[in-house]
Image (cartoon, rainbow over all chains, first blue to last red; front, top):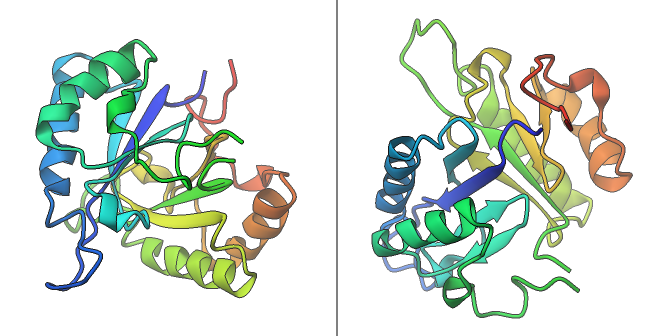
Length: 111
Length: 111
């Protein structure tokens, strides 16, 4: 078994005010990260699943951006309201939450 | 194809001075991250391979800690002198650098 069954990276990159791409920090990245950590711990999952801060994932315009490994599933526009669904559906039941997929051809394509 | 062929996360977590586990920031995590970014760009790999800052990867005592996805290979004690070998051997030629594996049973085990 690998160290972590799932590894969730949440972008918390901060750009200067007014940057045209925006940034995940200003969109609530830190709150999303904290909520993932809190819920994983409450559910007793935090020894096998880890949520981590990430630097800029280069998907700023889709933020808050979250990428889940080992599958490399990319979520965009994630808010605190989405954390429970991602945990219950994707992390626990291995059913990624398609409604939150980044809607751009560079992401979430297998071929 | 996935957004990134390889995704390299380098811990840059900072703990208070004197913490018994130490921290990757104090061991040079930021320098390692910057060097990965610089070399990937120089080699023209930065559109398919990304190096990112990570928060605490919970391997503080083995830092600087680097984890490479999608394989989830864990490297410890990484310095700037190791970056080129990781890129050439693992990132480009898919041969992970075993001498840098974290030497702990919780890491780099497939079963």
